[in-house]
Image (cartoon, helix red, strand yellow):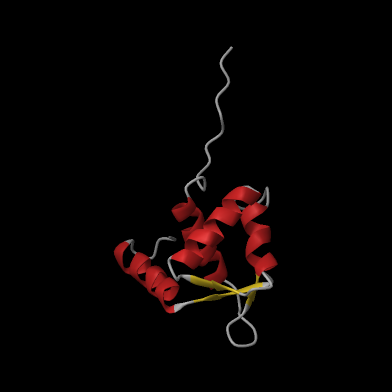
Length: 101
């Protein structure tokens, strides 16, 4: 009997980062554009949400920060979407007919 590994759509850091940007953009920011990290972490990891893993979340955040899509506060408690992240979403919407990134 052969067992197959389940598909991991967020195994690639870029795919995870794009989904995290999408999730962050869907939330209402507070105080100077801040978004609590747990508000993107919960739906990303949830069994009812993206069903991603902790390492996929970490790799996605790291990728987004390295690409200047997100700013992660040094405390790790919140992020801000940066201009490049906003541009990424706008470009994806115009190219993909409004499809999520």
